[in-house]
Image (tube, rainbow, N blue to C red; front, side, top):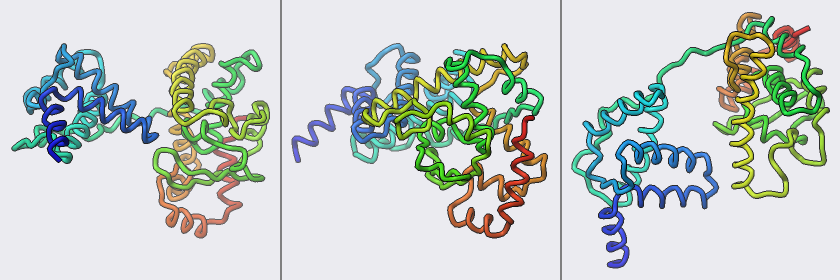
Length: 309
């Protein structure tokens, strides 16, 4: 017991960075690579702000955190990025409180607004989506694959990039795809329209994954690195594709999702079904929606939504 108390006092005395690195290490050993990456990037930003890796817990005061937020904005980051970093720093700080590493009288994050600010949801009109579809790209190139993944996302009711990367062939059954969203764990089912099946057929390999990004033979940590690298390349390729297709918007992975939702709303698809296809609804609510609407009717509406011919 005394040994544990000595360790805690040593961590508190040596500062926040040492403790945060320990938390990040625990996250990685527990397979929580996304959270570990978020903590690491936030910690790096705060170290750059202070100019030192020796950061005492006592430095965490409301006035310092507000100065830090202003500093992040001056680096060219948006308000949501600043709040993202602050939320992660708060999470690490609160862990130290829960583990009794520190015993502050007042939590310095209290009263600091950290919620995500609403952003403009950018969607593409169908004429621009057709340009992307009809763009002449070298077959088998990384650009062509990124274009195909963007279109697949649109056809698949706005399937997120992480969900596409984790999608397995066993989840593609006849004319339907069933999967659980990586972000929320909520179940989603979408119709596997003909253009979707034609796209993924081009990339079929011996892998259990639909897209050859993750590997059956590698562990979760290596596959997470593959995912992060692929997402970075995907967004970089989309910007190149936008220029080649003369689209005056900077494409990103989420724009296929927003484009499908907007097109579905324009086709008067019931909001409940749109919510279900985007994975915003619970499993119970999704089933109620599907029971309430004729499946063939939903399929016909979605065909109109995704038809780019």
